[in-house]
Image (cartoon, rainbow over all chains, first blue to last red; front, side):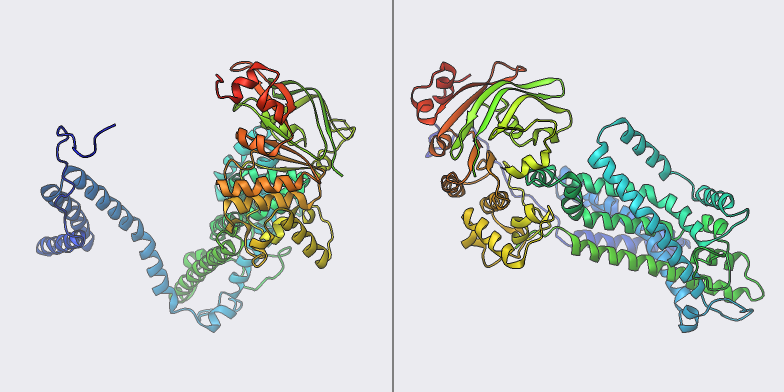
Length: 356
Length: 259
């Protein structure tokens, strides 16, 4: 036992207080770096990109050096890495923000009642509408979802609950991973060949688009659902078995509800991934100017194919169709965004309830 | 309705590994039997063979005989699901279903088995099970709140309520108090005392005072050595085990001179 009344003299005094940069230091350096970069850049006649890059470099170097001078080496490293992380985040956000801005500014002007409710049937040289393409995209994506979700979810249930580490499960996992890498055009060609064999050469129909997209969707659904099912604690399965609940009921009533939020998110991400596919739909669905509600007969328009053909074959009045292509792109982004919002809400709604 | 359990020459395997060897014992009806022994000696493994939960683990299997009230559990014609309805289980860590409310958790065993219950029957079952688990007064005003919102001790009592709601004949408890504080532990021990008038209870515990407090009989399991299978060393009335055990190993373990 140490005598607490007399502290041992051998212990050196350890100071806990060190000089620190003020809390506004990073912002101050951002401002100074931007000003300095602007000064240099404008004098030398650089572009905006050059000025921003110089400002980032000045910020990272300036903050680190300042910190090194006032604080200590560890704090300086911390400042350096923090600055680099912020710079990386900014760079990652640039394409996203500029893409959204560009599509919104170009496309917003196009949005009106006529644009959303007319098709392009018998429209020549004047603005028409993209109703036919919206209907086509929604129907084809719906068909793809209806095919992929049961197949994908049941496969995931097999992999997690029944397959385990067996050789068959290993092969399925491998093949699903291979499927993830299938180029979308190959999926389109597969669907085209399939329906040519079943119905007749050169058949183009909406359902074929659904089949092609489901080839791209299934592996995403399988992998995300598998990860979610694996997260369900084994405790819950055992608790259910111990109550005398058969395995299939345990899966349906305990495992799936617990994983439901994540599964819904995974399915939505898979939909968002395939809803913008152009190449397979170009092959198997063709393109048309008319509204087609029938997935089983006739060519079907879709937003990505509409955007593509409006740009490549603008017809007699190129400006009008190019504007409509931007409008259609905006609608496509809005649909994907709405899907993501729905998925988040559904995730919140189905999430296991904790708290009181 | 409680049943006695007869076990003879039971060998328990994980794949090729023999985990527990040659257990023969009789667990009397309507009493509490405690299983004690060092970690890894196969107490929990043995407990899980009593309601065929053992075979949930891939590769796990059993040789020998376990009969509840004269019916062999490992007969080819026996459905493990039926066994588990007769022999309920409470686990080491409380595991209420996170997607369900307190009310639904208690009814889970019935609802998941698709039993149609009228509203009044369901209410009565929930109240009876929660009363039985000494939880009713604490949760009666918030039955529709999530089960995960309860404290650890309350969750464990909720799991006990869930287990007794299906009216099993035997209740297995795998270290039910090891994750709980002394007050919750004492609540659960009181509960075990009350439950033994209706159920045959088998409890695994690391806490020897607990074994001495709650059980009528105690079985001591031990390992012959690292990598060797666990064996039943001695089973006797608890009073005898804790005062004059037959085996020296038991004496050594109980008095803390073990290993």
